[in-house]
Length: 190
Figure (cartoon, rainbow, N blue to C red):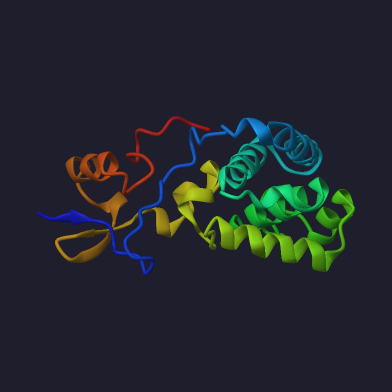
């Protein structure tokens, strides 16, 4: 049996499947900027979202701080906080009012004091820089991972299968290879 992940169009680059334990390490010279942006986003998440969103936004901010050169050094902190929040929200369908939590994007722009066009533009830049897309397992809220089809599709013997439907022994191999975020049935409640 051959177990591999479906080769993505980006040349085979593998992304981490789980955002649990994502690094918030940032270069020393950007620590103050990281703190400024995440203070804004943590406050926003406390008022409108939840801790899951706050953690992902902090991780995305740290990832942008580690980019060389970091794009965060140009522009205002509130605009970056808005763009990062919007980008994480877009990946997790925050603006679909049938989701919990959900939010109208205008609330986000108003809370950060950013024009809609500016917020959307910065969000698109963040998504491009961090290679985010809808259902992106790397930036998916842990509570939504069970519902995320991209997190579970793997290739076994040349066939794409849902890893949740294969024997536990194969799931364990897929997990060790980083192809799935966790072994179904063994995940602690969030």
